[in-house]
View 1 (cartoon, one colour):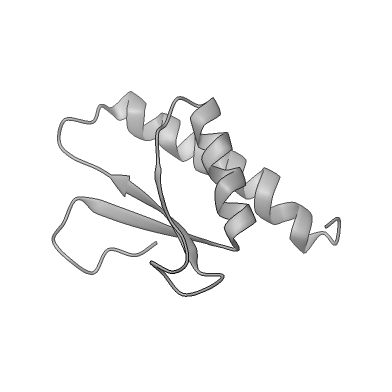
View 2 (cartoon, rainbow, N blue to C red; view 1 turned 30 degrees about the vertical axis):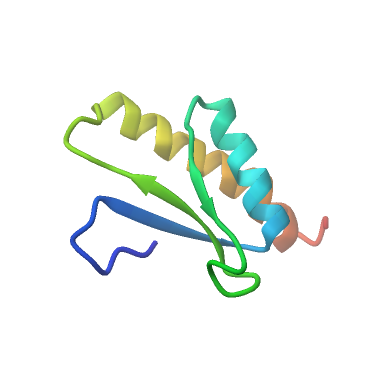
Length: 85
C-alpha cells in the first residue's frame, strides 16, 4: 500500500499488467470500480490499484473492498506462489 501524501487516494501495488487487469475484474465482481495505474504511468511491472477513500464511504463499502482485496490475493497472487502459474 502506498499513501505518502495527504490525499484520499490509497494505492495497492499489484505488479504485472495482466495481474492488475485480473485484479480489476475481481474488484468489479464485488461492485467496486477501481482506477488502475499501468505502465507508462508507473514503472513496468509495478502496476497498482488506486482507491479513493473519503468520509462518505460506509463501513460496508470498506468491508466489501477488503473482502475483494482478499479475493485478489487468493485468485491472483497465491497461484503464482504455489507454482501453479
